[in-house]
Length: 432
Image (cartoon, rainbow, N blue to C red; front, side):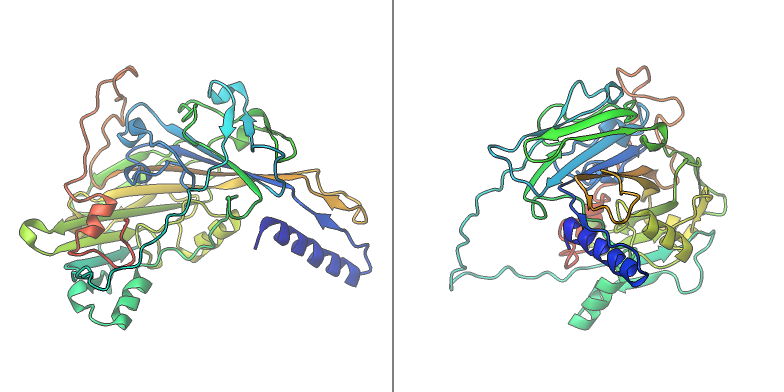
């Protein structure tokens, strides 16, 4: 359901409730334009960067910050801007975001309307063509969840691909690999609005520095939307960095994770992806662990969630509370991963602004011109049980520190390599 329809429906429900109570009915229309700013603060070895995606997630054309991925040079900031409008431009669509100087972008941020690629005719397969032979995946997936020194009874859940011989078992695999049950967010997109623009998009500036800020006055203007004027305060800036204070293997075999408390965090989530075996054509194991008290796959945590969803998942135990700053990773996970990829997320809240504000008099129509949503997260990561290079005063060339040693996951241990390493791969997960 589109943004306009949801607001109109909400207005209709409110009006019906008011009418039932004898109150005046308020008419709600709009918004004409919807603007989202997706922010992220990243330190350590970024899982998103390793996957070739922007550190902020959810946008196009982002360039991973290699310095942040390698743990040197301090935190990085990423920003994704998405503008959707119900209006069409008279000519070519054009829009730009004029940020305050503290964002250090060197000027305005162009919001480019992506051009749809022309469709290519698909030639039907020849009757003489030979279908590609399916290769049965080899190996197992071991799924752990929860914090503790030793894995509790019933863990891990083991999926052996040698036993996947019928659709029912494949469906069970899909069910077990489902992630956290969170309602997805729907930012503006070309398919949901008459006109759409986004940044980053390949035009300069391509990124913003790690010491940038959002505090101050912003203007968004274009040929297809009303002008958007707003100001953000220090409490609406990028989230503070999330840093691992402890990522040490205990003499008992488990890894003790500890991190700093990040202000404005609504919930934390940690995960590990690792593996073992696979050499010389042998089958391999993929090991997935999450800090969740309920079973969830390690690579399917949402990038962003609404505050209501985050609070619900904290209450259910799927996310750690904002007061939590420690979590032990089971000894069995440490033994099985052999240098697993660790990711830790701090989910923040939102800033929501609409113009004009809702009239105090319910009899006055509310014609919304634009709405703004700013969403936040802070993330870090590394290799399980290994200290980050540059984490304690290190740096990268040109930034006043020594060049950190290369911290590279073992061969084939990237998120894609782990899952593709199971023989022919996992059905439904070709790109991971």
